[in-house]
Length: 165
Image 1 (cartoon, helix red, strand yellow):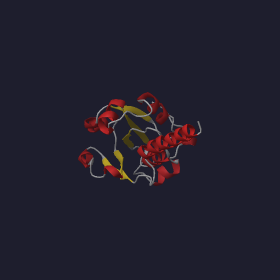
Image 2 (spheres, one colour):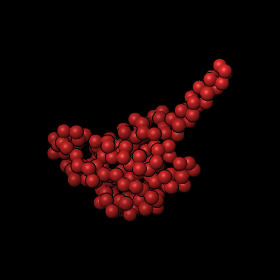
Image 3 (tube, helix red, strand yellow):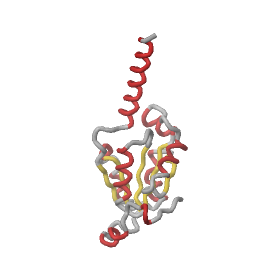
Image 4 (cartoon, one colour):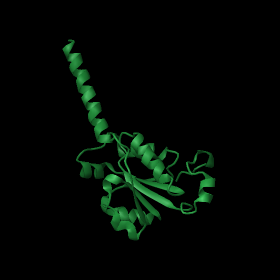
Protein backbone atom coordinates (compact mmCIF):
# COMPACT_ATOMS: atom_id res chain seq x y z
CA UNK A 1 0.00 0.00 0.00
CA UNK A 2 1.27 3.45 -0.91
CA UNK A 3 1.43 6.15 1.73
CA UNK A 4 0.57 9.75 1.03
CA UNK A 5 2.56 12.76 2.14
CA UNK A 6 0.56 15.81 3.24
CA UNK A 7 2.15 18.19 0.76
CA UNK A 8 0.80 16.31 -2.29
CA UNK A 9 -2.59 15.36 -0.89
CA UNK A 10 -5.65 16.87 -2.55
CA UNK A 11 -7.26 16.66 0.89
CA UNK A 12 -6.28 19.78 2.78
CA UNK A 13 -5.95 19.01 6.54
CA UNK A 14 -7.84 22.24 7.29
CA UNK A 15 -10.67 21.05 5.06
CA UNK A 16 -10.81 17.78 7.04
CA UNK A 17 -11.15 19.72 10.30
CA UNK A 18 -13.94 21.82 8.83
CA UNK A 19 -15.72 18.83 7.31
CA UNK A 20 -15.59 15.88 9.72
CA UNK A 21 -18.00 13.95 7.46
CA UNK A 22 -15.08 13.00 5.21
CA UNK A 23 -12.51 12.33 7.95
CA UNK A 24 -11.45 8.68 8.21
CA UNK A 25 -13.67 7.60 5.32
CA UNK A 26 -12.54 5.05 2.78
CA UNK A 27 -13.80 5.60 -0.75
CA UNK A 28 -13.79 2.82 -3.32
CA UNK A 29 -14.31 3.05 -7.07
CA UNK A 30 -13.84 0.78 -10.05
CA UNK A 31 -12.96 1.07 -13.72
CA UNK A 32 -10.90 -0.18 -16.63
CA UNK A 33 -8.82 3.03 -16.85
CA UNK A 34 -7.53 2.14 -20.30
CA UNK A 35 -5.92 4.95 -22.32
CA UNK A 36 -5.87 7.26 -19.30
CA UNK A 37 -7.46 10.67 -19.95
CA UNK A 38 -8.64 13.75 -18.07
CA UNK A 39 -12.07 12.22 -17.46
CA UNK A 40 -10.39 9.44 -15.47
CA UNK A 41 -8.24 11.77 -13.41
CA UNK A 42 -11.13 14.12 -12.69
CA UNK A 43 -13.46 11.42 -11.41
CA UNK A 44 -10.66 9.92 -9.31
CA UNK A 45 -9.83 13.33 -7.80
CA UNK A 46 -13.50 13.99 -7.02
CA UNK A 47 -13.77 10.50 -5.50
CA UNK A 48 -10.70 11.12 -3.33
CA UNK A 49 -12.23 14.35 -2.05
CA UNK A 50 -15.09 12.35 -0.48
CA UNK A 51 -12.82 10.69 2.08
CA UNK A 52 -9.33 10.29 3.42
CA UNK A 53 -8.42 7.07 1.58
CA UNK A 54 -9.12 6.19 -2.05
CA UNK A 55 -9.06 2.53 -3.11
CA UNK A 56 -9.35 1.80 -6.84
CA UNK A 57 -10.36 -1.51 -8.40
CA UNK A 58 -8.90 -1.84 -11.88
CA UNK A 59 -10.87 -4.25 -14.08
CA UNK A 60 -8.86 -7.31 -15.11
CA UNK A 61 -8.22 -7.98 -18.78
CA UNK A 62 -10.60 -10.96 -18.65
CA UNK A 63 -13.35 -8.91 -16.98
CA UNK A 64 -12.97 -6.17 -19.58
CA UNK A 65 -13.21 -8.72 -22.38
CA UNK A 66 -16.43 -10.13 -20.87
CA UNK A 67 -17.90 -6.68 -20.14
CA UNK A 68 -16.93 -4.78 -23.30
CA UNK A 69 -16.13 -7.52 -25.81
CA UNK A 70 -12.55 -6.33 -26.32
CA UNK A 71 -9.23 -6.46 -24.58
CA UNK A 72 -7.87 -3.19 -23.18
CA UNK A 73 -5.10 -1.40 -25.07
CA UNK A 74 -2.90 -1.62 -21.95
CA UNK A 75 -2.74 -4.84 -19.96
CA UNK A 76 -3.95 -5.00 -16.37
CA UNK A 77 -0.48 -4.76 -14.81
CA UNK A 78 0.30 -1.57 -16.73
CA UNK A 79 -3.09 -0.01 -15.93
CA UNK A 80 -2.70 -0.84 -12.23
CA UNK A 81 0.79 0.70 -12.20
CA UNK A 82 -0.44 3.87 -13.93
CA UNK A 83 -3.36 4.33 -11.51
CA UNK A 84 -1.16 3.60 -8.48
CA UNK A 85 1.11 6.49 -9.46
CA UNK A 86 -1.65 9.10 -9.17
CA UNK A 87 -1.04 11.09 -5.98
CA UNK A 88 -4.65 10.95 -4.83
CA UNK A 89 -4.90 7.13 -5.10
CA UNK A 90 -3.94 5.24 -1.94
CA UNK A 91 -4.43 1.63 -2.97
CA UNK A 92 -5.07 -0.30 -6.17
CA UNK A 93 -6.33 -3.85 -6.59
CA UNK A 94 -7.42 -6.07 -9.47
CA UNK A 95 -11.19 -6.33 -9.93
CA UNK A 96 -11.82 -9.86 -11.21
CA UNK A 97 -15.64 -9.90 -11.24
CA UNK A 98 -18.54 -7.45 -11.29
CA UNK A 99 -20.42 -9.83 -8.99
CA UNK A 100 -17.80 -9.33 -6.23
CA UNK A 101 -18.31 -5.58 -5.75
CA UNK A 102 -20.00 -6.14 -2.38
CA UNK A 103 -17.13 -8.36 -1.27
CA UNK A 104 -14.59 -5.72 -2.35
CA UNK A 105 -16.51 -3.02 -0.44
CA UNK A 106 -16.33 -5.13 2.71
CA UNK A 107 -12.75 -6.31 2.17
CA UNK A 108 -11.44 -2.74 1.93
CA UNK A 109 -13.77 -1.33 4.59
CA UNK A 110 -15.28 1.19 2.18
CA UNK A 111 -17.62 3.83 3.54
CA UNK A 112 -18.42 5.25 0.09
CA UNK A 113 -18.75 3.61 -3.34
CA UNK A 114 -18.29 6.05 -6.22
CA UNK A 115 -19.30 5.29 -9.79
CA UNK A 116 -19.85 7.42 -12.89
CA UNK A 117 -23.39 8.63 -13.41
CA UNK A 118 -23.68 6.47 -16.53
CA UNK A 119 -24.15 3.65 -13.98
CA UNK A 120 -26.80 5.56 -11.97
CA UNK A 121 -29.04 3.20 -10.01
CA UNK A 122 -27.09 0.07 -10.97
CA UNK A 123 -25.23 -0.11 -7.64
CA UNK A 124 -27.95 1.02 -5.24
CA UNK A 125 -28.05 -2.55 -3.89
CA UNK A 126 -24.87 -1.72 -1.95
CA UNK A 127 -26.48 1.09 0.06
CA UNK A 128 -26.78 -1.34 2.98
CA UNK A 129 -22.96 -1.66 2.97
CA UNK A 130 -21.93 1.95 2.30
CA UNK A 131 -22.98 5.26 0.84
CA UNK A 132 -23.34 5.06 -2.96
CA UNK A 133 -22.44 8.17 -4.96
CA UNK A 134 -22.76 8.65 -8.74
CA UNK A 135 -20.52 11.42 -10.08
CA UNK A 136 -21.04 13.11 -13.47
CA UNK A 137 -18.69 12.01 -16.21
CA UNK A 138 -16.53 14.55 -18.01
CA UNK A 139 -18.49 15.74 -21.06
CA UNK A 140 -17.15 14.95 -24.49
CA UNK A 141 -14.50 12.38 -23.58
CA UNK A 142 -14.47 8.61 -23.36
CA UNK A 143 -11.89 5.90 -23.85
CA UNK A 144 -13.99 4.30 -26.60
CA UNK A 145 -14.20 7.55 -28.58
CA UNK A 146 -10.45 8.15 -28.12
CA UNK A 147 -9.60 4.67 -29.40
CA UNK A 148 -11.92 5.18 -32.39
CA UNK A 149 -10.39 8.57 -33.15
CA UNK A 150 -6.84 7.19 -32.94
CA UNK A 151 -7.85 4.37 -35.33
CA UNK A 152 -9.44 6.79 -37.78
CA UNK A 153 -6.38 9.06 -37.74
CA UNK A 154 -4.15 6.06 -38.32
CA UNK A 155 -6.32 4.93 -41.25
CA UNK A 156 -6.28 8.45 -42.82
CA UNK A 157 -2.49 8.65 -42.49
CA UNK A 158 -2.08 5.22 -44.03
CA UNK A 159 -4.37 6.16 -46.93
CA UNK A 160 -2.45 9.39 -47.44
CA UNK A 161 0.83 7.47 -47.60
CA UNK A 162 -0.64 4.95 -50.08
CA UNK A 163 -1.93 7.85 -52.20
CA UNK A 164 1.59 9.30 -52.43
CA UNK A 165 3.21 6.06 -53.60
